Length: 241
Ligand code: MN
Figure (tube, rainbow, N blue to C red):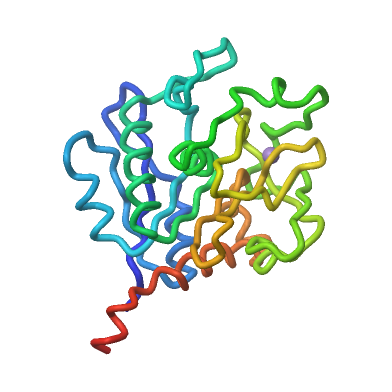
């Protein structure tokens, strides 16, 4: 039985459509999971969605409403989507409570951090005086800056420790890291690029880059999805096999 991996979707403004990058689904499928699109519907369905899934990917997207992490919006804040924010934060809190395996990508990493009690820095120019270019204009599959991966971390077990080249499509960055999380990868300007649970029994990993777009060029990045899927096999299913 392949585990069911939910991938959160965005809402296209004014178009009446949901959207999800194809590469997320391809990565989950290639790593051995069944990708399922999770729609940000308002209402009472969040618990049922979490119960039906074995693991979750929180995908990339727009900015998180700063009021949701206790700050007033600064002019640098971009488009926010209240429906998606509320749905994903509720789903993330449920997933963390239920100890579901979760992988957060870009915005998804910020969602996990906020759900666990951390904050977002509204723009990287507020974080560091000399930021690198984190909103690349090169193709999505091309890695434009480096990340130092911490020795002995979960991320290092998959990606290797030391320097790693990644892609970058963000202007928001981690503000205060949530108490249960540890930063295990940083860009040379100090920006947090990888976070993971301090409790090594759990699979909670967030990356600021987009591994789903890098797999074709470098299969190392598929390892993040493989690890999620390995943690998503339900214990009870073994009993009946
Ligand atoms: Mn970056």
